[in-house]
Length: 112
Length: 111
Image (tube, rainbow over all chains, first blue to last red; front, top):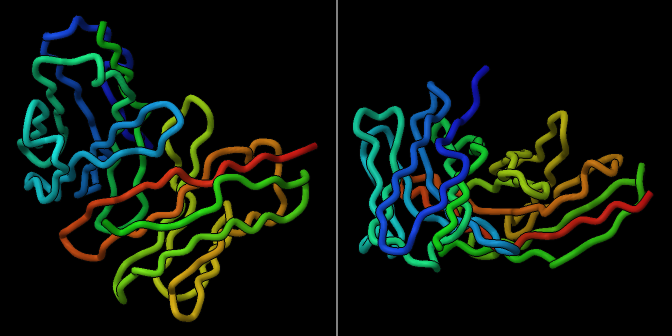
């Protein structure tokens, strides 16, 4: 049973660079979620897909953040022109409809 | 946003039951209640979810109030490995699947 995987696990980048993260959900799950988490806080919702359709997104994704799930399977999250405030853990989760969300290990982004 | 309210922290003794409360007064009739926990340096882990009836699984039990405005996660015998941050969230039973996590309850288990 393969769970949710994310790549890379760690990313260090310089301010102003673009970064892209990948998430591979559990294969039979139709919903995929992206969250961001900083130390001491709960996960912050970024966006979610139902199959290939992006159905909901936070205000963050209207600017430098964009996400895709082109064939309803894996998803990518891109951050353009990174800023130091983007340093965080980026979490991906998947679920079958409104059943429990299964989270990946996360990608830790450090912007220097 | 669908927001839940939980105590910041709770303590328990090992091998004793733990009751973690959550208020979700804005819940609508078709919203699910989900519980997750997060151990240090790990991603959140799904624990249990329910709609109206109480639910049991191998990890925990979920007791949902009759008016559905509150719920309680029950760990029947706390172990040191249950020390974590526990999150209660509402999941809208629509295509609007936004999940709002609060700051959760930090559970400390004392040996």
